[in-house]
Picture 1 (tube, rainbow, N blue to C red):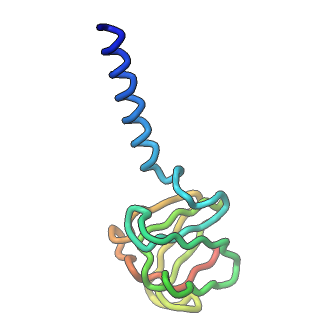
Picture 2: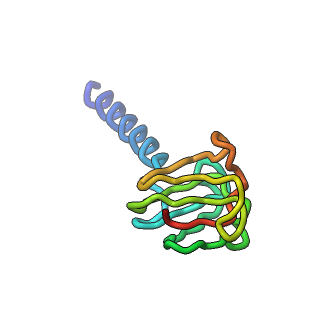
Length: 118
């Protein structure tokens, strides 16, 4: 009987650990040395992957004005702007090796139109 209880507890613990690991940003699809934007909070919806350079990149259709989360797996910061051409009054700074599961908590939901490395 003791062996059955221990086996059940071990199985339950492993299941709980697996669920927790799947929810972390490191377990996501965004590759190493990439910057990724997601259409929905919680890294849901479509993923758009970039390698930002020192010149401005306008976001393409599908994610332009529709980003709600990001992962920055690069060793430098990336700036997002609310207008094409890296212009506009609303910006968002993604620090190196950072992530944000919900742009809604900082007023940048559905605003990103361009980006570049800073």
